[in-house]
Picture 1 (cartoon, rainbow, N blue to C red):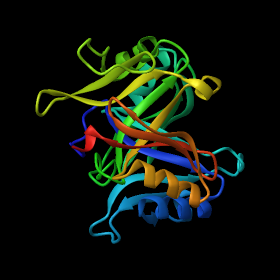
Picture 2: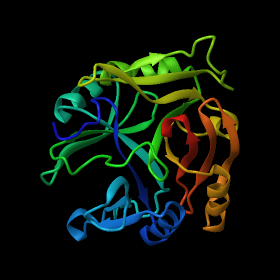
Picture 3: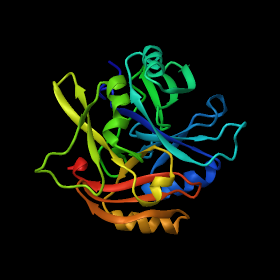
Length: 273
């Protein structure tokens, strides 16, 4: 098996950008990421990593320049989920009501990828790894993804029914003995077959405040040692704060926006404990 990431779990996160140079400067200075470009053959897609050399670099995500047909599209982060057979999973997604953005396509010898919008309009990807060089190789630590959250103006348990059927997730409502949330919330779990245990990788919640005006979307949450310092640094680098640092049941968090408009979360979380 090319990766230890469980089937159904997030395996990759990336963002499109109308200004690759500007975004690379922002993210590399914010998270101290190193970058490895793929060149013209793959549209100058750039891998973002912890570690400064190829021998020690561990991948946390990617940046893709906007396509020539839509050069000014607003930047946005997206998440792709691990599937064993992208063509079969894509067909299942269509049957369950998803809208095809791009049909499965093989990317070199490394992966097969397809892009969709779920029945509520949230964007996501399906990712079949074909080598052990793709997918997250850094996870659950400062500078890497630690959590994924779906934000939806409605009952999150209903929005997650599609994903639970497609990706075999368990969707769990918090118990009475667990910390309360500001809005209806469900935890998202996938099954790790090698250890026969369930792994919580994210959650879904009802939109709050300004989020109500946004389309349903996945938020990628990156770890940091200090939410407050990272939020302040993002502003200094040309970004902005959409949700000021606040303590929630999972830890301290804030929602930031890149200079080109991509929303993402930073958090100091139990996920890094």
